Image 1 (cartoon, rainbow, N blue to C red):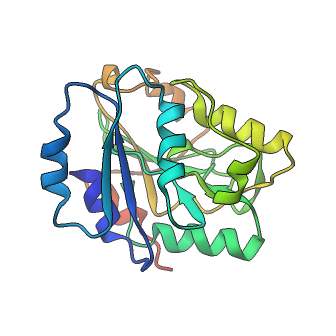
Image 2: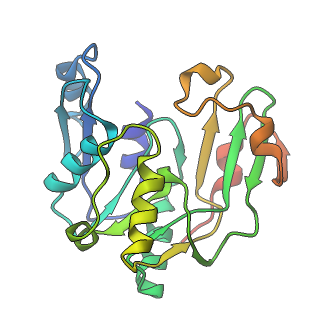
Amino acid sequence: MNILNNYRNQRYARKELIIIINKDSINAKEWRRKAAGYPHVTIYQVPERISLGQCLNCGICRAKYPLITKFDHDDFYSPYYLREQVNALRRTRSPVAGKHACLVYLAASKKLIIRSPRERNRFVGFIQGGTLLFRKRVTRNVRFSDISLGEDVKFLRDCTRKGYSIYATSPYNYVYVRRKDKRTHTWRVPDRRFLAGSRPVAVTEHFRRLAVRKY
């Protein structure tokens, strides 16, 4: 249960995890059983016809803390991920933060790269959807659209239109994992798309240890 482990490992005290299941074939009771040993985890299930954007809005409505972040279920988040992101959000007083430059692991070739290596520690117009962090009050003016593809990009564009700045942190403490079988991804582009303009880090099976930076 990668997402549960990523959540548990975060060295951040005040946190909760809200999981929205929108696949009819998934047994929510089984997920709740597995999550029982993790503190402050809540699991909801909605019909499969409900868009990803609406699922995100659903989770936001149920969140009790003033900061909202999005974890993708199959990526890697180091124990220091939340510390880094929240510190940057507060230091820059930004309403939205995340990672534009980020580590990407290409499982087929075992290559670890930094995508968009220059887009770090600066204000930007785009960040990776799996690293999105924002103040809950932003959703008074911007919500996720009722779509299942590109909902993060649309949300960020709407934030920019409303005057909310977006800050990109370092490339570290998060790894976007591209599996061998691209059919298992929503965005089914070939690995060469990620290699273009990227900076190589290593060829390895142990990418997690290379991603960690302490905060």
